[in-house]
Length: 178
Image 1 (cartoon, rainbow, N blue to C red):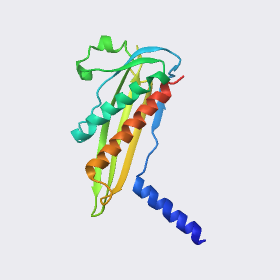
Image 2 (tube, rainbow, N blue to C red; image 1 turned 180 degrees about the vertical axis):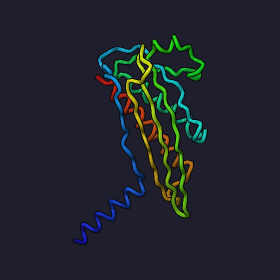
Image 3 (cartoon, one colour; image 1 turned 60 degrees about the vertical axis):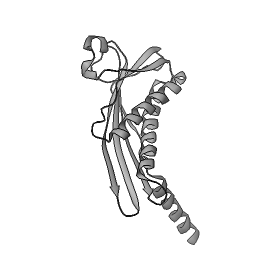
């Protein structure tokens, strides 16, 4: 009995030290054909006005880097960042494109004397040509818990951001993989 109690305590300690990872949730609004070749998928910079600037921008860059690094798994020729904000893009051109848009919000740090719990939420949408509604939506909440003796807030932000970028990119790659 003591052995199981010891293992249970170790498991709980491990989960607290490594952080909690929530599962991305995908909603399909229409059917996406992963067999269809797509020359370009455009990516609109995420709206990250509700998160610290040093947090939001690296997530977007990492997200795009992961997509481009893994694009050979899909039938996408390239992922390209749209340099303009969505409201500045010509609607007649945009409706003919495959593109991804999204946002990051709900960034919270809850610190105590010895530890910090960090949380953030993100949602992305993939749109296909001729459609005003998204083909699918991915919602990703991410949490990270750390002990101040083992890490700093700056280092924990990097870990949280990388996890969010990875989760978002993997969800898109999964949907686009034949």
